[in-house]
Image 1 (cartoon, helix red, strand yellow):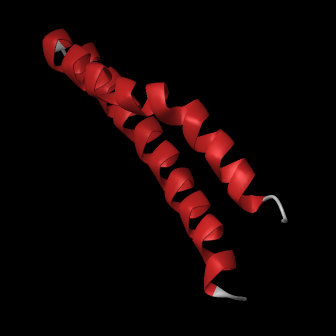
Image 2 (cartoon, rainbow, N blue to C red):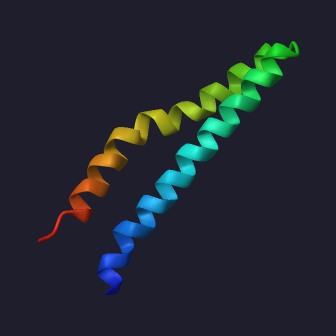
Length: 69
């Protein structure tokens, strides 16, 4: 596998990790909110919005990179 083939795969794996971390952090923010810290939970969810905003672009870019020439 050439280096140029590795990059899209690497980015795809990093993206999968990012989505897993987002889900875990969201679970933690829900747990925090259930224990009375809704301000902190809201702050965490606000920070996670960047992942949501960028998700479609990342998916499209990975699809283009993984398409054979």
